[in-house]
Length: 280
Image: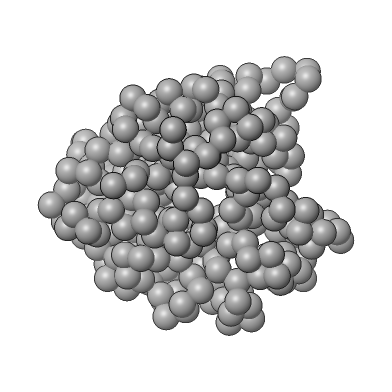
């Protein structure tokens, strides 16, 4: 089976030619070549590369450079600014670039965007016209996703990171899955999918993180495995586990059949983003 990570980041060291806008827990640099090497080391075939908002805000220039250097291996998702009056044009321009498979709205952390801002509807409408899924960073705000899904039935919404706040440093929160009912309530909307990204960072026990499986199986049962996209959220997770430790538990668990594993770790992503890697 193809193993495709639903979310990784790549970025250069902070430098005058491409300065960081903020900070991001993780290595001082993880270039596209470095990310590809990390994937090779653990047998991950391809990944969705999301331009890191914390460092580059709405500029996806480096992600485009990485894609050009590794054509066919990385799909691309760009954060867009709903407060920009021209955001619909931005979505349309992004949609025609090679390798792009979606856009992202950052409801949190960082911009403090009002979940009722009318620009969100502009993004969702433009994404539907461009046949682009919209990724939503929305922890603590899951109740708004149902409204978006009802108002824009032609737009595929992908909830980032289980819709749950995830740690940047250990330990995991005392009740990491406390808000899970808010996510499960979205399963009735056919145009909502969920990224099972960063799940291992929510574990309160050592590797291989056996305590994540009961809550994850509730997600699989509610949404169906074909609306669930596995990923690591590398490099955000670097202070909690290694890249291999974000991959191996999903390969080794007996809580998934081989067919379910293949869907979760690549098949669902190819369908939802309408993209397949070209492995050379």
